[in-house]
Length: 259
Image 1 (tube, one colour):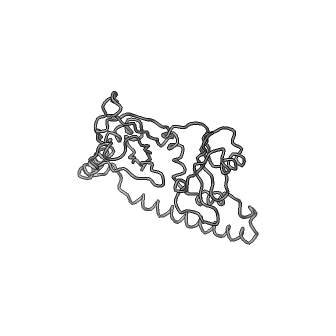
Image 2: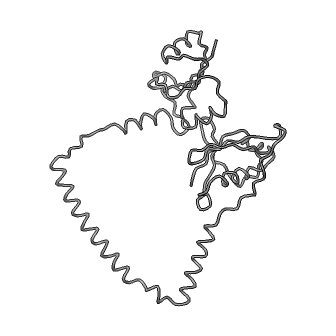
Image 3: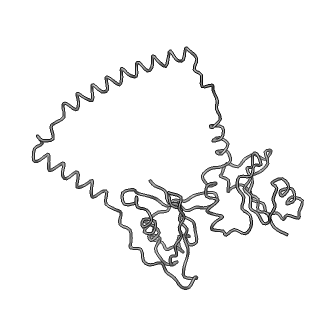
């Protein structure tokens, strides 16, 4: 006897929840029950156990996992369903459908051509104004020594602002007693998924140090971290003076996104 974990929303008569996919009710049934037999027959399930994500509006199978699956992997695979709810999915599909014929009536063509002529005239005026403003600018070779000093100072300030952020040094990955360690999974902007062990007493700032070490663009491009929580997402604050255990980040999944 196997079990089926089915994630779905309420029936059409009950309405649709306003949250994302993961706020929909989850149902655990066994394959030898009447409900389980119906699910197995309708979705043509050959192996048990299985986890299903079902569209609460159409009943379509959105995702499935067969056999035993680790909690961390299941949470990673469910991350796309946190970005929006079933309503957003159907709105996206409706936008992809062709609405009007590609043929444009003759009257519309005439209006478009007139508008294009007006746009071209405006573009010419803008170009003339731009040329006049460029001509009125000073020749760089004629800059005074004071103006050159100001320009040099501005460049130095830009270079200083572009320096890499200062994160605490990342120590070697700890090993030993599992009761003292925690494992954190990270999903990078390019889709890669990495994991690392930290001490439960380590400050959470080391998580930024670890992500920074994995991202080449982070030298000149800021990023922020988001904790994946079923039904919501939480932006992490770098300035919070907490450990991994105190912050609840131990054995969690983190997403990295560019600002």
